[in-house]
Length: 521
Image (cartoon, rainbow, N blue to C red; front, side, top):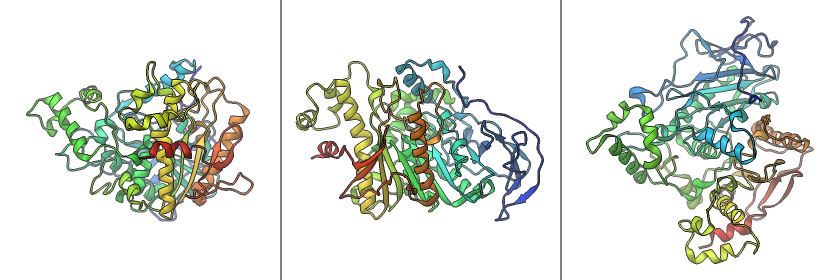
């Protein structure tokens, strides 16, 4: 069985009328709602982009370079805009994924093996250091300008790619949203903090340049630059939120959808700690007399091979930096003054279950996370017959994903923003070993249920529910539609959330007491 979503048409007839865009800068050529045999084209600047159509007939522009290749001397430098100053650009195929060790693919393979699915059904993309590209799906048959969803993939900032099968935007585009998925440099290429670089958070700079490109050109694709929602899952959610609070975004973001990415609320490495790891990497590869310039000249494979050991125990991600992140998310939440964002925030019921290894214990997990005198109260909150696995899942989910997300919702509410909170509980048939796993909501949000995922009528109904909420949020800044279950805005007094499951419901968040127990000092 072939994995759905990997093959795309790569050519067609080029003809049609010329339609000038409202701003006089970009142009749409041809009819985006033309028959599937006709390739859609768009003019950006002075360059004609030739796109393709997905299996549903929706126009797709794939592998659009928003930056010059960050290779050679450009490694570890801020991204530079790619000029669109003439010619024809083929946008019919995805570009290579950003260079990585393969951890993104390993995540899928591990999850598939846990539920008895052949991992070979998920193939690897090509990888390259030249990877700063984005993809756009748009339905020209629908009136515009349409709201824009810019999605940032997850993968611990070390893996993943912008066109994983669950992120293809055709189904959402057919619902009236222009969908953009974007790549950014990973691992040491995007998040190393060497003291001689002069810049931190290059991955965040990549995303900011992509956002700038979208804001400038999305009108040519039928999108509304005044209604850009940035969304992400896991590390992508953390990056989306950091982008929203960064001066680099320049007020271009109208809303944020934050899926399973709560941990930056509780902190991360300091710039000095990250710089020490960069220097350790340099010493390991080049010796005591090494330099950043010599690191730039090394083969990328040598850097990737050395990274796991040198960076053991430290997360890649955005650090405090005067230009890109003057105050971290943790600082803003602790000080009680985060921006009054419009945001959907959520996590899944079993975020940590699939990561538990044989022999893991609750005591070992808690050792560096909670003072030992608090263990009896925390462990005493579980039923006597609770398994070690269920305890570990509950602790990991709570400390890393769930409770920081609720803290964030409280902080945004107090700051005058609007947060809508969810928990995703749906477990597919045969998936009890990983439950409502980390990333389980993604096929529902994008309506991209892989062939190997057991999908029942309840999953189709839940998909329609989530898409209705997401579409309303990106369209109007509020997830509620007439006739749907009304999703109340989070308030620090009532703290109500939607529980997405076989039968979705609204209630006071059921994990409040557990999170209070974990946060007691």
